[in-house]
Length: 473
Image (cartoon, rainbow, N blue to C red; front, side):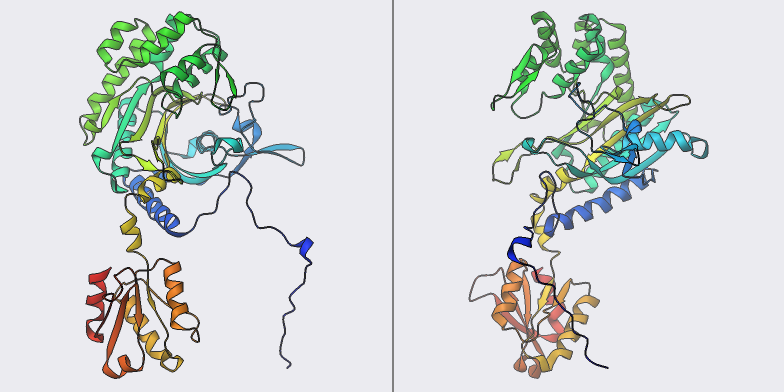
């Protein structure tokens, strides 16, 4: 039989493609991907520990199921959602994991426990404007309780889940704050201020939600509450068209942090109901381990329209650097709240849930635990002479049998300098270099690629190899 030759197709220069990604999408690799996979495993294990069951839903839904609670453009409410025509039916990529959950529960509630506690880790898609720097595809880690339940207990359990998960991921208690509020409080304020039109109410809530966003603050919120806001680029955002007095009342409300002061400020039945629910929540929280991490903050309101009562938003208490090395506030890493699902046939049902932003969590934690990430990198076994290949593979087996991450260089004829260049490109810490003398003397040379030149290499007995490597990693 003749030798099989593979023919490589040729292309002229004009036909060759420039490798690139669409704006708003990204590839994941290297240390950040390693950390993300580690955190996802921790998060999943903790969700299971709290009694939540896994669920996977389709990435595609009928557009009518998706709805329009995300977009801020009232003239084009589906503008932030990727939609497609499929044989005359309109389909959309999911923009969150909550709507697919509601659809799934409505289809299957007779076969599910009540309440149903589920978690899901999955990718969502948002047709963000490329100029605002947001990702158009990212992963969410959601936990929800839906059906019939005591909201005090359920919301307390979700808060405990958030705290327990973040601590398991490596954060200290002092490094994050879980802020809680209740939508009914601000809805009562709007009733008092005679803000009754739904469109105007939505704009007020979305304006308040911008309080902690970069470049906003109370001044930016006040502008959005009134006629319009013009940002630094000249872009105009239409406001809620409140009167000066109405806007002032909302701004004064945002400055209040004490429940007692709030009760005196707004005497409205709905506001009082929201305040009572917050007080009842704190009573249950005190039965757990994390009550001291939870603070009341009425400005936490969440921009989506789905929320009806309890709101939670978790913020980090330390600064991180962006890609340009500038210190920035990382913002919220876990948020959610209570919602009511009425859009599907059958009786309405209550839901409450949280969502962890895994991409943001990876970004923040990677700057805190870089050493731990580096310690997971493999030891490289260099090949000095192909005739000793069996001995190099024996060393490789010894390292892996002792749970030391390790790899062997995959080109036996390359010079040592090229092999060390490979190690440096991977930012490895250690390399094993053995030639004829080492094998003759039953020794191994360990090169510390991060050590000072002149004192970064040592030769040890082969029997002591594992102990010596463990001292260095």
